[in-house]
Length: 94
Image (tube, rainbow, N blue to C red; front, side, top):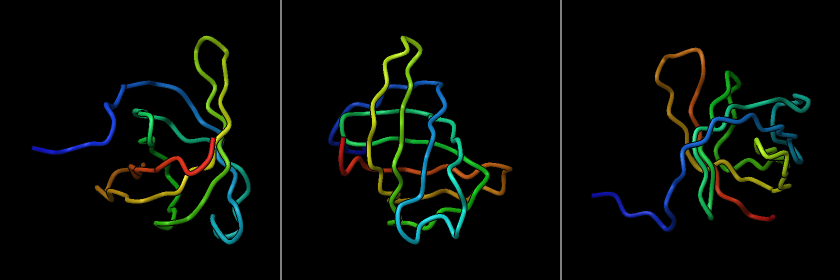
């Protein structure tokens, strides 16, 4: 049984992510598809390779048009040989 700090909520929105520092290999801001979100983190997928423990400024815009700005640290990824890679990120600033 998997123990989590916070309950995940499945959600289908896009998130604009902007690399901070050396993250993103020189890539500009890009969109990722959010899979789920919790108080402590976010699951998302993108076709881009992101290094674990890299940081991104992000803006989550919900269907209600409310938005939240956050800093996300990528903490894990699943490379499942699909066009998009799934990532887990934790919020380090909101």
